Length: 458
Image (tube, helix red, strand yellow):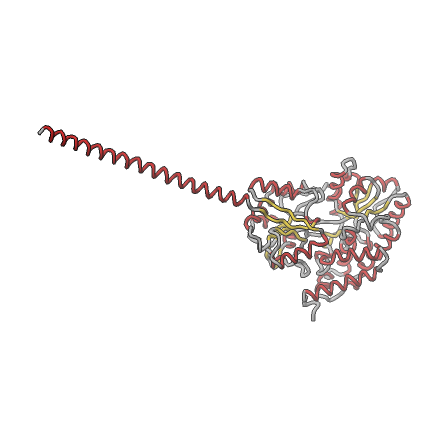
């Protein structure tokens, strides 16, 4: 009997312990499951973030540009490094020679092999421009669009849509002259071509090269022809529209042939020196800083470039400016357009490029771009002050202005480098000024027919 009671008690105790054990295990299991679930959730989130970070780190955006498309100071590359430090996204710059870029990027865009970011000259609205609206992403809805000045925005737009981002403000080419040399020779800035000749001859007689010119880069020698568009507009305020509608041709614009003839005359007189056919534009800073030459054709910002390269020569103080007097011109040519950056439609990283554009458009980065680009005097962004001195601004405000030909007339900018070769041929004696004009006209008509421009093709 006692044994039976003892067994019964033992059984009751065993059952009690089992229930307690089951309850305790159940409670511990619930906590463990909850902890495991939380841990798994955190691990999953961490894995996702890690995966995203890893993906971002592995993104490299290709940035295609021509040599003169980017500041020579390297400020765009510096900003790209800042962007990489912030986002992990790398930028691979692929730079091509100026003379090859236009044809090369067209081939790349046609084959679907364009870089993610494309840097090209603007405006893109002209018929003869590269059709960036066909190949690039519409950026009209981006926040920064509202902060770009209207004239510059129109240069990266087509049919009311914005396709690119641009930074530099209006560019105005002038003659920069050495004030000390002019003072020593009792010279005043010329306002007519005849006065310009007299100044050049006096400087040449003093044993100094009057003008630094460089033809090897292919573009600089072309500036006098088309930066003096104010002479054309002064002849007829509708002249650009008439040229685009093929109502008149370039041989009906006396100023153009006159300027070509004066360039030829000046070269033969020795005003460009003896080495201008082998000079490079990059060497112009040294020529001006060492006073080998008295004048060169550039914008106000070029003085800062000279001073940065040759600090002992205070170019911002020593170099004055006057309006290009070719053809007796006294109107400042304004190029409201600059190089623009575009996103290829074929890019795998459209959103990442948009992030880069957003980054560049931050006010602090715009200021860094402005300050890190010596040749730029102003940006085309509201709220960003220019670097013009009061004296420079007063000078610019004192002259009438007109848009330059290459941003206003079709089939001019697209043959710019070819015109440069024509001028070289003229300087070498292989072409006459009349030949150069005829060559420009023929190319213009050939390009219009290729584009099937209705104004030129019947």
